[in-house]
Length: 479
Image 1 (cartoon, rainbow, N blue to C red):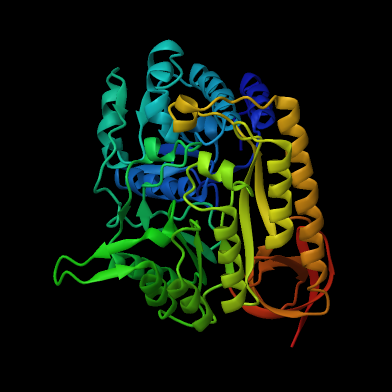
Image 2 (tube, rainbow, N blue to C red):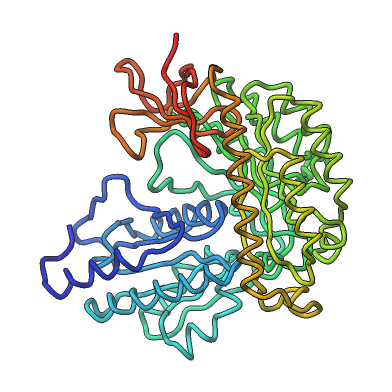
């Protein structure tokens, strides 16, 4: 419960109303506060890697005696794990920091920290100009959090944004906060060596380094033994995973790691994200096809459907090359679904080139896509070498056309599933009704269906699809 102080009650309303965008809270499942202990509150924005990182941070803080809480106003430490991919994400973080600052005014001694991708780029603004935070910690410096907190408690600013070539946090068991107890993320690598001209990730997360394969398998095994039934292997570019065993110099690639995790148990589903089109191999595709518990779903960002724009983006493939990759996926796995990332209005994009992006959506038949207007990010190759010359009105119109087409194709995609029966992993209650379960099939499509008393989250069941929307399959359990 929030404090009964009327001033804090008004602040609670402002806190709730300030939440914007896709925000997930990592917190103790029961919302328990522990008397006499220090508490931390953490919000995560952006990609799945950020949510996974927040669980690593929670584990490190737990070792230092901190307990998680969902009640911001009783926290001794408020953290926000940030994303720099788009300008809107940074605007949202700034709004949240101003809210956190008001919490500090009501609770002197509370520390506020910025974690993740915004830390390095905006450290001086946060610490010196705007004075909104006490800690700024980059994605490779989370082990240093206890020392940085101690410094901040003494009145010094805690800052570490050093990017490592070795850090993978392989030995840290993430604290699964806010978990449904069924699905979990496992980070298998960090950083990115691709220099896409629009992307800030190589500058905020550093170079690629892969985690010890046996530590990944051990973490997945432990999750299965503790009741989890699905793991998602995470990396900025999972297909470039490569780890060399120092004991015998043997090397393990992503296809081999995928198989190692799939072999833990047939009831442990395996997903992965994200793939770069240039790196996903036939070996990966055949491994997926061979194991029923490796989900038949690939997130394969195209970004643009035009070869000239792809070259400006430094994506290292052409329109034709990408189309051949799509054909190969469907050839090896006809039942596979593919999703994508698409940018509208990249530098110098013409109307004809935009039309090629629309035609790519139709060709690939994406089940869904993440679609954005181009947002120039400081420090990227595009910001230094290209001109962001597409008017915002044209960007918005092109984005709307992309969204409209993708929505139509998603609906058509789902309509083809009516009458089919899928094996579904029950994840929990539907968002709209506690009388219904929700769960995904192998193709990453969400199904909603009436509950049955002999089933619970973590169980598998078969669901026949009766109706659909563009985003959801609606069905009933069948024997």
